[in-house]
Image (tube, rainbow over all chains, first blue to last red):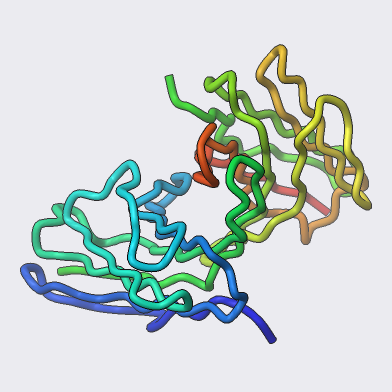
Length: 115
Length: 111
């Protein structure tokens, strides 16, 4: 079955350490996204990529980095510069249709806890 | 002003009744709108998409869009306890496919 795989489901890190969250999709979607969700809040966009080897900052990119070397993969690194990294991280993908929009398909998320 | 706003709730609804959820958006050029359902601890799943003014029905769900008033709503008919979740409204940006989400409305359906 096609879908988006995020791993791991739960991740624990010490403050000051960088950590990379994995996101792989086999839907052949062009666009991929990273969102962050805090308790009781909506989703906030961190980074997005509409094509391989290209990505743009979202609304809260500070303290995060990404790469898009392959169409299927869009890993997110949470760096030590991120002040409040504990959150639920969601990866998503969509067919990129220019101005027309297609809905986002989400992975199951990674819950990151930094102490 | 937030770009997409929703009442956080909780919206308490008796089983079998209609749940009515509202969403307003500030970007007048927004073109596409989506409703997602999110169970606690899970990822969002798409319920409805709507692009044109008027109503769109899918099973027990009806989405309504009024671009002049910059207003989107979701009706859930014959509400079931399994409908208890947080419902996220999302609107596109004018360029590309960059969705902006509201904070979500928590719905509780009581048996």
